[in-house]
View 1 (cartoon, rainbow, N blue to C red):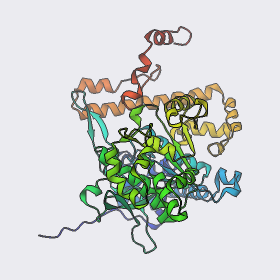
View 2 (cartoon, rainbow, N blue to C red; view 1 turned 90 degrees about the horizontal axis):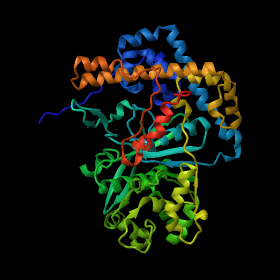
View 3 (cartoon, rainbow, N blue to C red; view 1 turned 135 degrees about the horizontal axis):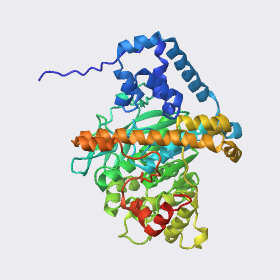
View 4 (cartoon, rainbow, N blue to C red; view 1 turned 30 degrees about the vertical axis):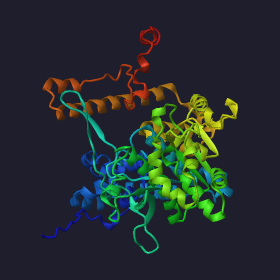
Length: 532
């Protein structure tokens, strides 16, 4: 059989343009308008064709265009400004260390099954991932001593489109790590860094990758390595894919493998933060380590380890919690537990609402809560609802003493505001407003004249309508729509009319019909003569 050799052919980046390579490897570009404009200037059509992916862009751009830019003084000056700004950002200590200089030894490890950092890295599915991505970006701007831990999926999450009959269809794009801003971690021997995780009676290897998110490193595990069987290579094949068995495998790799990856890198976190219950098995791994290190019982080690663990839950709906059949937990963790003397029923009890009910499924949220010293919901009301739901776990406590607080979800502002809005806020709040969380900064918002704020709003609304028309026109043509359908798509929406949309996944618990629950009230709002 003839041998097949694979070659990667890509443009050669001239020495004078090398800063573009480093800029593309740090995701700060995705929330810095000046860096985005720099890459757009390279080739505006290619920027759109590559899905706003600088790494892919640099691999496809015409060599002649690079030669032109190498001698373009205006472009070089623009590139140098952006490059110097990134270096200044990375070298500055940030708000946290300026405010808490004695906290330099602290390290927070933030675990999440998905991270929505930018659309060109499809390693997320919905709001949980977007929140996790914003969490890392905000931590970067504030200079928090934080590292992220997750999984790197070969397939990511699916793309959606409508076919000619109006039915939703999915496509599953394959992530090519060569054109993503991910870099392999390496051990002291220079070889790729690999960690081993026990699954049932076998061992699975996971390679460790790194993404630079501003000042924050994000470490991602990937089981698609040659040492694994085809089935084990597929563990990180797709986000939220497969059956319950694949899901528990993913969550063991995330929780146990993620903590082992940090150990292998030399990072020993002061605090482990679980973003939802997917990573709850880190509590098991941390407890195991403390038992071995100090000769403690599981109960003693759990209490000690829990002191540094935080658990954030995002949904009060049972469908939002991962639950596993007791037999599945026994299959994948039984041998591991027996090796350090833990009775399987003890372990199962930590994941049950009623710890004595042997038929109750193993709930990852309950397990996470029982291996944490601090739990929080994501709004005041959500905290109240979650306390009621979790009250049986703390049945000996009055409801108001159930140890679940709330921290209202926030966003990373610079990821979501337009260039025009950023310029307006810089002018009236000062250019450092994203890095200064104090309330005093936002009191300056009242200085912004109404006319200026409204004009920026109009620009953004017009751009949204233009984008919606362009996107709908392309989709209509793709599914074979008539010329009349294409013309209709080109005039859809009106920038001068109030438009209300639903920008969430259409899962039932997202309550897409909530807007229509009270038609009479909706009619009064829409037909109000003073504020229609």
